[in-house]
Image (tube, rainbow, N blue to C red; front, side):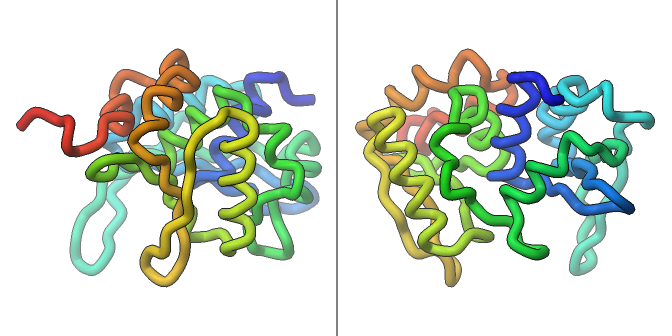
Length: 196
């Protein structure tokens, strides 16, 4: 059985970059971040520490001849993850569950933001490229109804992303700031407000 904190962090991670591949009988949680986001990887490592046997792995990923330093970890396979795999996957594709609003606690939104949030010129985006348009719309509705955020959907690289309008950034900060790691708070400042 997962704790409330583990459920929230898992929700945000699955909406972001994490995955639950099946290995043998049950799934295991796989987390990988670029080395610049090591603090986030280590935070998640501590949250799921009871399910992990090995230290985080730091390595260089090579893509198109370039080197990308990364940090990753994987849990042991766990029956506790089986229901989450069932909710967040359709076959091998990660999806947004129909009842996602019930899981979008402030901590879950903060983890999702740290994973896949990005400051835009005036607002903020959640990079939801891996989800279908109706799933992105489901997330937008949940953020509007649960937190009163003004959220839109934008086309981006052949898919859709969520856009939080500038007038909702202060409200979003109120929701997530207690949970956002210092190294990742820059994501909450639109680019036009940054000093050179």
